[in-house]
Image 1: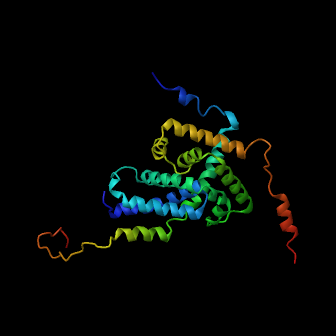
Image 2: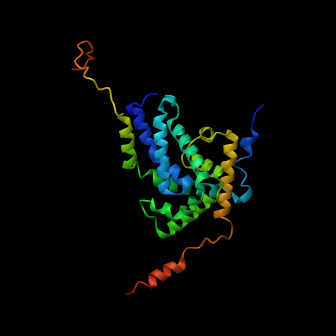
Image 3: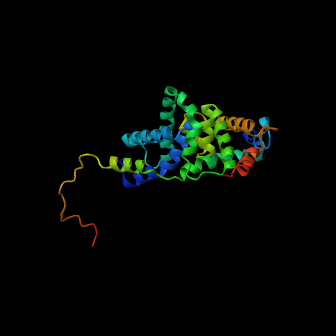
Length: 182
Length: 76
């Protein structure tokens, strides 16, 4: 299919969620944007192989996911830099409490095996059907379902285990309130 | 032969790891909050420009072929 105006607009419209997917996968904003850029270049170079009328976002996500996979193997270490970097991408800085909770969630998400993480994101955040997620990941629908379930159980265990430190940052708050003189 | 068991055995079982419906929805909520934060940032200029640029290939066959008297497509 040639690159028509409407196709170009559809690709542009998919960019925000491609970025969200890339950041969720890599945990690193700069790298995520590089991934998106490479995805777009590749998509435009191979636009002839896109079937008109088929699911454009799923096609783009497949490209990005495969790029991430091959890239991930190469530079695994940089991923560990993730958490701090991610916060920088937020436009609206969440309140301190929400921010802590968010960091915890992000950290827990990073602890999931990659298969489970991508399945959970595709189904739980991007809003793809199990069928689309399966085709993006190149596996069976049942496999996606079980990955999503395992991802949820693991997150639940990491985040909401009975007796986990679910306390607010009382000491920090008191220090801030008490120490504002001068 | 109906395949009911896979549907029936889900959702009702709070199951291993304490995955109650409440926790499940909390996870879903946080996941989407994280994701939507990025989605709301829209399309960075860098990507808009990239797509625009690639849309205009170096040598566009923009030859002066105008003024065809035959193809009056109902304009006017």
